[in-house]
Length: 125
Image (cartoon, rainbow, N blue to C red; front, side, top):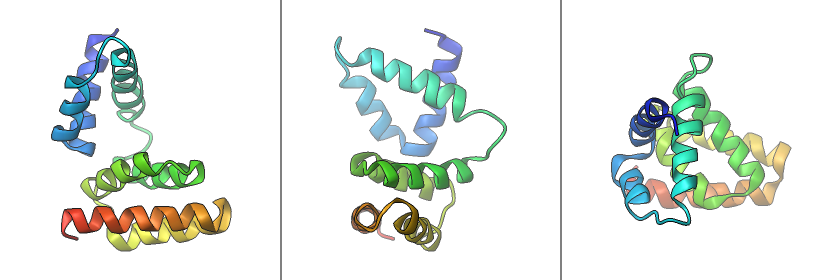
């Protein structure tokens, strides 16, 4: 493991997804899934999320669209929070999901809208 990338990734992951969620994920990891936590933190968050080519807002737009295409509601929920933390508005998130309805399918977009409503309610938005 590259400790420098892991540490940078941990910081970025906390800033985007929230320290409480990230710290619980690391704390609750065991011998079975800790390698995945390390991989995600180092590679996804330390390396890719910290590249200079795209800002965090743009990365959030992309993640919401891709996760809708993959129909991954648990990850969508996390990344809606991250998108809000990265400055996206409720209106922009709505537009992402409308766009994905056309290119990824209406059922997937409906699930993303449903998930977003839950997150907005939890966040008081």
